[in-house]
Image 1 (cartoon, rainbow, N blue to C red):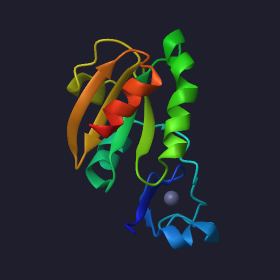
Image 2: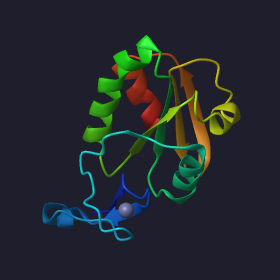
Image 3: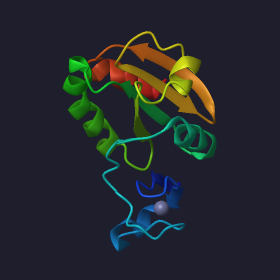
Length: 142
Ligand SMILES: [Zn+2]
């Protein structure tokens, strides 16, 4: 079985973990912090996002949101569910578009929430709006 990949919430490093080591409470190879195996989506900066997209061996789903945005809050638990269900095979992060606008500009952000899928360093697809679960799953699968 292929290695799984987890982003360290402490230092941002991407860690490959073999499935049989998951029960050993794996820690980050760089900073030794325990890896969050539930892969809870955390907020990242433009710089951290660009590093992640370049280095991740698994697809990266980005939730572009804003703290004042009601639909963003509404869809957040669903995004967290999808991140947990696909932990190790997908990395989900959030970007606060009031604080970080560079990558949002690159994907042509038109509103929040917006979801963008990256694979192999490339932008694969962008979808705008608080998507229902089937649309989010289709985006991840694209
Ligand atoms: Zn780390």
